[in-house]
Amino acid sequence: MAELLRSLQDSQLVARFQRRCGLFPAPDEGPRENGAGPAEGAARAPGLGQLSAANCKGGGGPANGLRRVAAPQAYVQKYIVKNYFYYYLFRFSAALGQEVFYITFLPFTHWNIDPYLSRRLIIIWVLVMYIGQVAKDILKWPRPLSPPVVKLEKRVIDEYGMPSTHAMAATVISFTLLLSTMDRYQYPFALGLLMAVVFSTLVCLSRLYTGMHTVLDVLGGILVTAVLIVLTYPAWTLIDRLDSASPLFPVCVIVVPFFLCYNYPVSDCYSPTRADTTTILAAGAGVTLGFWINHFFQLASAPTEALPVVQNIPPLTTNMLVLGLTKFAVGIVLILLVRQLVQNLSLQVLYSCFKVVTRNKEARRRLEIEVPYKFVTYTSVGLCATTFVPMLHRFLGLL
Figure (cartoon, rainbow, N blue to C red):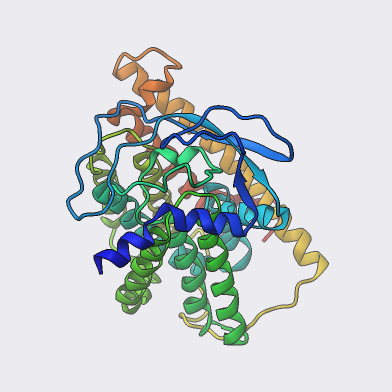
């Protein structure tokens, strides 16, 4: 078993997949283990580099016989693309597991498709992502070595690799939607299953193509997510009744996630994992709080029937498309405004409290600043998306 795990964690396996898909390192890339200098050559796609870890204390020794190393040093790597179909397919697929997708797809689902499905989807997504993020900083398994792997992304290079949270997010979103809609809407189950498999597979393969994860990281993410879905599925109906919880429920929604963020596992090197985890938990807290407020103050009408409700999926018309895009545009603009306003205000307050020089970006990495400002900002975003945006839609006659 240990030999199988080591083979699945082998960087050469990722490199062979990249070569088969037409992605190659530039010819004059040096053989150094953690990096290479700039290279000149023809037919290159724009090179992306790795970021060095700040405040690195060094990595611990392997406790399980698998590789565990400190974060890589910074470098700029050039590469050659010989198959642009795979290049753009997997770069697009990789974006489906990033923040730009979450901040667009999840609100769009709430405003235009089904708010009750979106609540279930977001809460399960938050749970799975939190476990995945924490597991990374506990296991501390490295990402694939470069060379031989070509790395196309730079932001997450300071994070550890196991499990792949892109794989986890794609799996949980696609299969939570499938399981939640198969008894609520009428559509061919085989078609829904095919779409879920294709979506999650593309995102998982994109993590190999971009050189961000080993095969073991991806398989680990899928397996952990499958186990969590199976374990939590019997309790999913409880999520539909969270908005009718006791008046003390909002306190728990805020206090528990903030406690988890503030007591996030300490990493050997700084990475954006803690900040990303705070963003995810805060957004989930804001969404849950927003649903509770809508119910408590009767800001949104209750469903005419309890879940599940079998419905026919209405045909997409031009009017529906225009209305949906208008609601989405209005909502995104308000969310971005709230995000920027609350972020600036919370940073100013925290800088003042801790006597930090304004615009000191390094200070944002301090625990006592990073967690509170991220948490307040994205709790406000989640609350705005579920409460204030629908109110604005109603005011503008879009509902």
